[in-house]
Length: 391
Image (cartoon, rainbow, N blue to C red; front, side, top):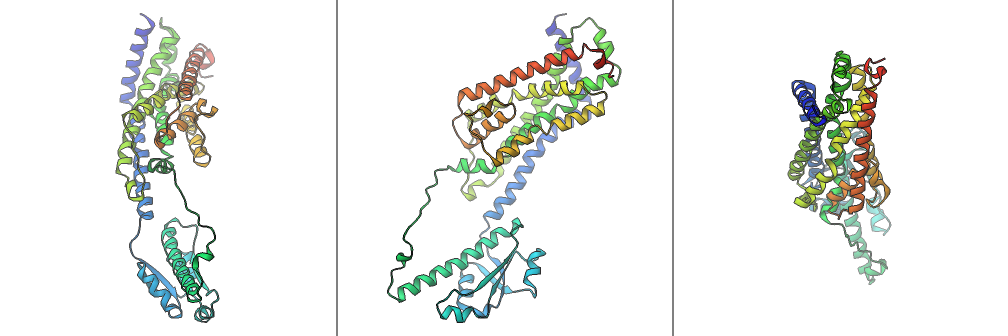
């Protein structure tokens, strides 16, 4: 029997065993859906809060000290309500997002042409309070600017003299590029799905075989170690690829459900973009399968292999966290680092940027070499008595 035929037989056997194993099926089918669902829920909540332009209730201490300011706030869709007895404690406990305090000497200072004191009790550590705080602050500042302009006009002074420089922003970012900043975690979930999808399959095909005492008889058959490794690797790759495809489809559906257009954002991935995504990510599935088989081969038991591979799944999260803090250009050497390079290039696709061909080819080549190296090392390990007997 040729190596290819043996590989096919082994792969079919491992796939059937994997399909019967509930853990393998769940890791390949259910976890990949976790990322897209989390993305859809989280960003829908965030965008709903950011786009909140409805009326808000604002507790005000001393509303009678500044009647004109209160009228201005109400004209901006801010409903003035009685303030709690202890504004500081109410905001600190989360009962109120913001409390405005108008000091007793507001009217006197205002009439004297001096800055009238107003205080805002806020808790900057609470994300849910940022939108109402921003709206209240903007309304107060708008009123202050309006009064300042009227004062200058009353004295015969052109208000523009107080603004010697007018700064205007020209934002060159497209709506898709802005959306990519929010969706920067999508590549990380895709990478996680690749590693988690084949984790139990790789564990069972190596440490599981040893623990069941079936690895030694398997190696005693007239079959080359390379064919056995390739067959197990092919089956594991199927599970990893399944997790990858489910996550990609789920992420596409999730991004379509996120109302990005309400805040001026957009994600438009055409057939060409999806081709780039598949070309960049598909090589990761065989690499992850080969790497997981190699790591699991060092384990003495199934449980130990699970521990090793669970730690290995942290590998795709580290570049994702780093890229959210420090974006890297695809033209640099980072694109040739496995996992990191794919995430850098995938972020470029999400931004709608043109992907440079050389970094993309280099990234794929490095992944292919790493896959071959892991398969070769695993085949060598299966020739060691220490590996076979788990000593």
